[in-house]
Amino acid sequence: MQASTPRVSIVIAAYNAADTLPETLSSVAAQTFRDFELIVVDDGSRDSTPDVLDAHAGRWSWMIWTRQENAGVSAARERGIALARGEWIAFLDADDLWLPGKLNAQMVALAENPAVALNYTDAIDFLPDYDSSQTLFQQKRPARGIVIKELFSGNFINTSTVVVRKTALQAAGGFDLGQKVNEDVDLWLRLAENFEFDYVNEVLVRRRLLASSLMHANQMACYREDLSTIDHWTAKRPDLFAPHSLLVKRRRALILARMGYQSLAERNFAGARAFYWQAFRLGQRDRGTVCRLAASMFPPTLRLFWAAKSRRRGAG
Image (cartoon, rainbow, N blue to C red; front, side, top):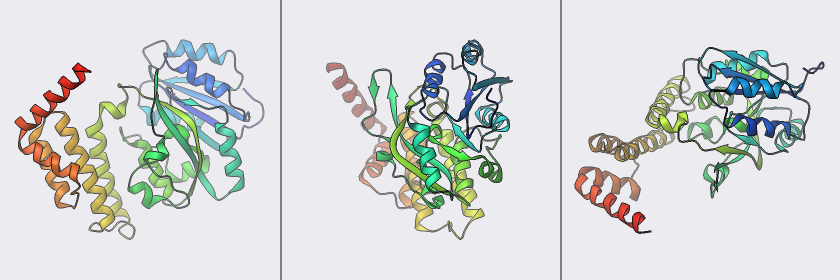
């Protein structure tokens, strides 16, 4: 453990991450910015995650780890934050990777703008043999300053890109331990209500795509939480998010259309119709929504389309 207080405390929440952790930890070790400590919280893993952590902590004086009974990612991150000694907290998921200049670029940007409480960067998704054709910022436009309205319209901040002032985290109340999905978006919105954000327009994080990730496994739950978030903020801040404003209607319609698409993928045609009708009535009337609404009303036509698409893939 470093004797002096580090500027940055890196917090990793790990659960059954033995396969990816070595590469993730190595990406921390490769940082050009060195004034940090690393805190890893093992959230009750049942694989060899503790062995991996023990081996690496034995090599690096700037790393500590602790173990807790499985309580979820928010509880694990909060445990790490409580142990952190740094002025700034940097989050890293146990399967993601940092590029070597990541922390340095952000600390330079934060030094140039002391009013900022949270800095984030661009990121790219990857599989073992494939990188996404678009970065996060190419898919979702970033914003700086007071960004609560932009965040309300759709999240553009990847957790593994974030460096945030610890006192701001505490003022916002930290992660909600009762929230199982979209817990990061919930925190960003609470922070954005009172603090300025900024970003570094560089791809400095590689996000590993895993089919077993919580986001993919609970997509419909994420959408329902999005709707709950809309209800929460329209009730809390009607001055910013009037319930019948165009901003709120567009956001709700987009989520409902996504729920319709997910229902179609699950062959739940009645559910898809209901979601698409709601989206349509709120003004979501782009060609894709209209076509999928029509398809949900005539399932045999949609099944023929899927069959033809499957045959084309097979022939290819």
